[in-house]
Length: 212
Image 1 (cartoon, rainbow, N blue to C red):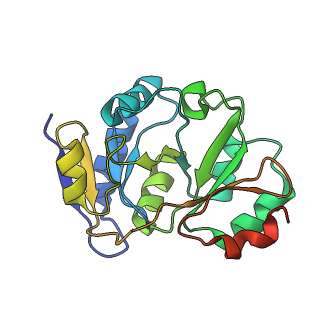
Image 2: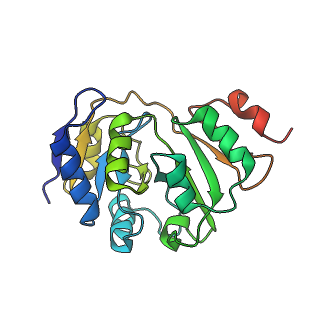
Image 3: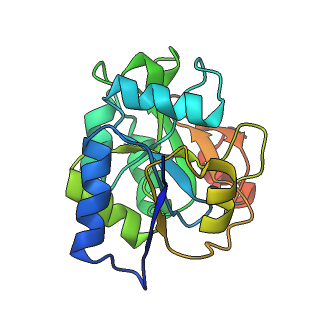
C-alpha cells in the first residue's frame, strides 16, 4: 500500500483534503491525523474490520481499549451514558485540549473500542483541522497514537511514515505538532474523579476535581 500524504497549511483544511480523508475513513481505511500532542491513528469506530486493522497496524493487544476523538459534547453524548455532572464542568474548562476523560460507554460502542471495560475514553482535541474532519464525517473517530506499540509517539508526519508507511491509507500532514507529553487521563465514572495518568495537563490543574 502506498501511504498518501496531504499537506495542510494553517488551521484550516481545504475541501478536497477533507473529502479525501473523509472518504478514506468511511471506506474503512485507517489514516493518521494531527492533534495538539501527537499524531493519531483514526478509523471509523463502528466499522469492526477497520478497528481490527488499527490493532494489527500498531501491533497492539486487542483487549486494550481505544481512545475516541470527538468534535463536540453532543458527539460525546452519543458514545456515553449516565454522564456525571462533573464531566460537564471539567469539559467546559479543559476542552478542546489534551485531557482524556473516561465515561460509561453507551451500548452502541463496540466491545473492541471499550476492551470490555464498559467505559469509553474520549476527548475533543485542540486541533482545528482534525475537528473539521470529525465534523465532516459526523461521528467520533478512533484516536489512538500513530505509532507501533512500544515505539515512541510521533510528533511529525515523517516519524509516522517511518513507523507506519505502507500500512495506512494517508497522513494529514500538519507539520510538527511539537508534542512532548501525552494527554492527561481522568476517570470520571466516579465522583470525585480519579487521575489515571498525569500528562500535558499537570495534576495541580485538575486537583480540585480529584479525591483529597
